[in-house]
Image 1 (cartoon, rainbow, N blue to C red):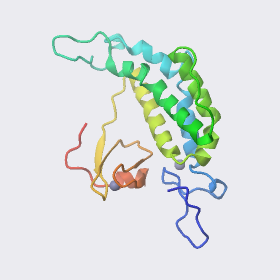
Image 2 (image 1 turned 180 degrees about the vertical axis):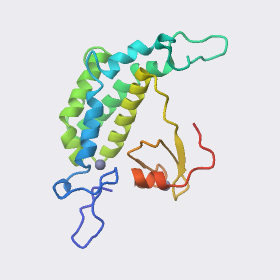
Image 3 (image 1 turned 90 degrees about the vertical axis):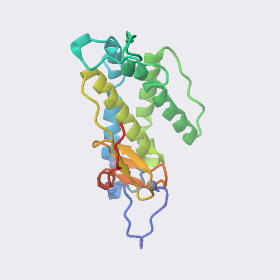
Image 4 (image 1 turned 120 degrees about the vertical axis):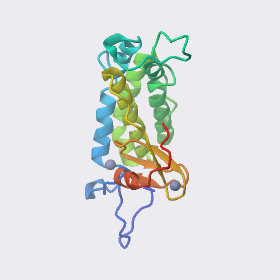
Length: 216
Ligand SMILES: [Zn+2]
Ligand SMILES: [Zn+2]
């Protein structure tokens, strides 16, 4: 919805995916600068030996620090590790999600597929560095920047929660005009309907009617 150039007689001022109207000096961009800064701040928290990703490893053992409930697959055999930090740490988690975006950006830019080197921590550090290096380009030109921003900030929040032991935000189910149910949280920056592709800003999505049964 951002790739349509607006004409002078068109009074729908271009907006960022977060719902903010773009400023004059942002009109050639997909996303507003506060959104770009928000994602950059989220990305910055992940890498390095003291970053959120490295600290996830300290949360794998149940009972440490007396945090949340231990996940168990069956009542009789509790797992010796907590699944949520593990699923964020392992391949398929944080590193893979960031690398998937990086591959997508390389494709958009016509660059060769990025190469991964080293273990997961190094791959994480490298992916964060590469994404941050090209963040300005992405916020200006990537049609899915809002999806990227939403996914990364949610991911970082998930890591934070594992480390602080804070409880997960309750998901809320709301219904789009097309009948599709969207699952959001109160801190969502915005959402896109999977049914009709309508992009909602944060205030718009929070205004949608609640679904009958909020599912977890
Ligand atoms: Zn924005
Ligand atoms: Zn819809």
